[in-house]
Image (tube, rainbow, N blue to C red):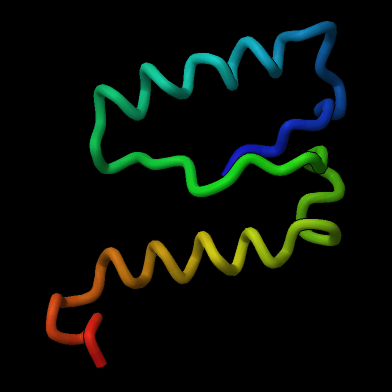
Amino acid sequence: MVASGTSFGSRGDEQEKIRTSLDAVTARNPHIRVSAKVASNHGALLRKDFRAITDAVRETVTAGAPQDAQHR
């Protein structure tokens, strides 16, 4: 999950530069996946985007579950 708002203490567009590198990271490692990009900053993420977080957790749990458990 990626928060797209400004980060506390960051300067200029340094956070967006980091976010643009995510495509290369996920291309190199199939075990890393971005579930969602939300509009909140890191300070408001839990308050404003808790549904996206719970969806990401559910996806992670489902991905790690044995195949027969996923179809119950």
